[in-house]
Length: 343
Ligand code: ASP
Image (cartoon, rainbow, N blue to C red; front, side, top):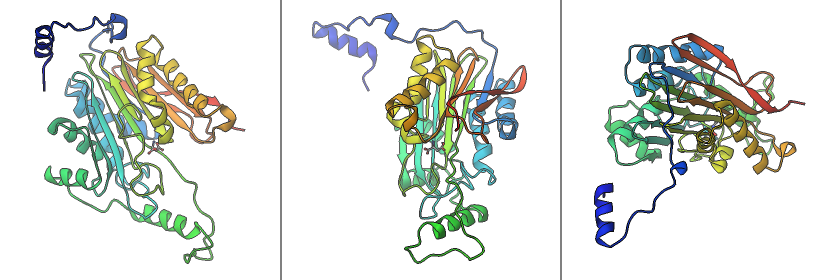
């Protein structure tokens, strides 16, 4: 790798110089009151406290920010009751659980991710090792699993009895033209559920880090990669600005570079809340307006100064957009906004 000093030297040997970048194109360090750590997750009361408690414990003791976000993400990954993340996540169309996760660290702007990884309960921890112990960013499928084995992760069956039964019900009700049929007493398939978790944090030094982890879209085509492991789509952050994460229809976050867009909007002066709403608006526009949008995405944001934001595209009666935070002020649930009302 060529360092900047050597690069400038070789340019001047060629009689060239670096173009002067206009400073307003670069991240402007914002004045931030240090000593106000905060950790955020994209869930409300039901999961928030449980998820954030171990992360906040690390932050409160001035431990490592990466340890904090990882500890919190691991809570949902290891909990079989959550059917959208890690162990006990809903499988792909073949009944195989394939997980996606990413991590990003503000101070060195480094990141790591795994996609379609099978058999490992905590993909965010593998993503962290990709970031810290390789010169790569994304590892997928068998390569990601082999890398996890190399680092001592156990390969386990991630399908629980609960998710196996949900999958079988879906598979048997999928078509009346195939040879599967459900028990007579059990007609009707479950709704295709989605879910993911974002954990974002700022430590006492004002540094920023984040994780997004998921089992992705239930019944996906094997090999499908969602937004969660794609840097700039399901997660992005900048140590001078803050962090953004997303849940919901990953394809839309990928084609809008939604998390990157949210961070850049914050860099340009929008509050985290305004940035989340603006990303939702952009996705609606890309799709040709509200009447064309039949999916949902939820964007969450944490500014370097501890301000938060949360917005979703659609109103969901049973799932209001909200986030939970833990800071010196304690645990708090904050309601977000939505752009399209449910009819
Ligand atoms: N964003 C995830 C994906 O598309 C799923 C979700 O959050 O519901 O894989």
